[in-house]
Image (tube, rainbow, N blue to C red):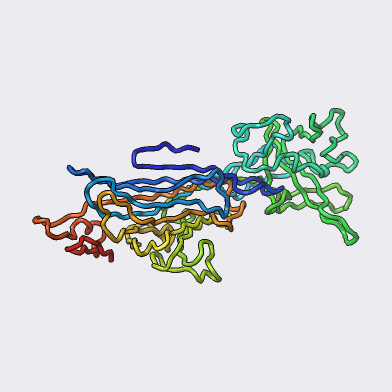
Length: 435
């Protein structure tokens, strides 16, 4: 993914393979986007210019727990002194697990996906024998190949119903012997021929005390040649909620129920959102980044001078939060004052943002001390939290030229009243106080 550079705007994109695939969970892809914006830039007959400056080197991979250095300051590139304030805005584009779509055991076509959701297509490489591109797999949210789901299992259910044990071979090495033509491809993988559910039985363990049987599988669409994932138990390939009735205990199921096709859902979350579920919970903490302490003991009020970092939290529809930690620069409170304004979008402290006002004049040619030091995808984030993630960290700058009275002897308050009604300026030094 690439962002076009524009005047006064810097954007950087990181593509990161977030977590290694486990058998059931599949691959999770994370994308980290940083974009800096300068707004309300003023121009005058003098050389006026204030902009954001950052030290930001995108790494090749962004993994949970990995700190990305991002130093953010404001620089006065002109010859006119100015006051500045910064706002940190956060936007997410996240693809999360959907609610799933129930599918009958004798279905001959895909069911209708829930609103705004899409089915998860499986990787076709192992079965078709030809490497597939990302565009060939329209969704491809999982690294579970079809062969992983069926290898080592015994075929027990097809669109025609139960498979007799005498007709079901180990599908990693053979086929359904009821047909004269082989049901496997050149890679010795079972290959379905009809549209519908295919369920495979696995013996998870067997000992003198008994054995546990679980089931894996997929939905095959003959017309398109595509395979679709079923909802599975967390971190496994085993079908979640499936009920297989085998009253005679002879390995021939009478019925299969409770199967759902896996779906995903795209959600866009912005600072301007004011209603659930599109809300980012923003909390301020003191202490080491990522350590909230027992029962959030390190939680402090927004703008507290003891704060050292800010955590963004979004749970989507899975209950598995996406956590992003923003580390404030050391000593930030000596240089900046954070003030929450009543006009900013917020709902119960969610999507809550205000402004960081610089506590001094930014003189011509000078750069402010840092406000932000780093951004981290929290190490507590798991692959269950999302499939794809795009995070935009926008640092927006406002600047205004300082003003003196008519005889140029004293600084006036007029220029900052539009920002903060309670603010004042030292008439002799021009240094602002933000209240």
